Length: 147
Image (cartoon, rainbow, N blue to C red; front, side):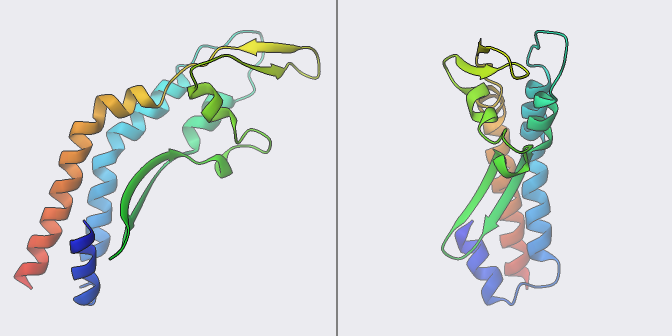
């Protein structure tokens, strides 16, 4: 991917080629993203009210593509900055392996079980994502070689 990104830069990034590669990479990651979002929304909820945590986690799930000559990566992450104020750490706590505590509407602190939602989706979709990303990079390399 770095080689192709470097070649894109050297070629002056022909019109649309770089954007097309990014779109194809994002499309390859989309099934994994949708599964993470679905898993987050399926986290069980106890009690009578909802704080919207599950929906916030799903909404904050983003794909980021960095394609540079020195650093190239594809990231699927729950962006803590996109979470409501004061909830940035909650996606990581929900994914964790141990219980954690939180106050309930200003009342007592209660234990909260972790409900892993991210790693399962990644493991399930990783082979397909890897193949899709490689296909997108190979297509871009072929476009560049044709001129």
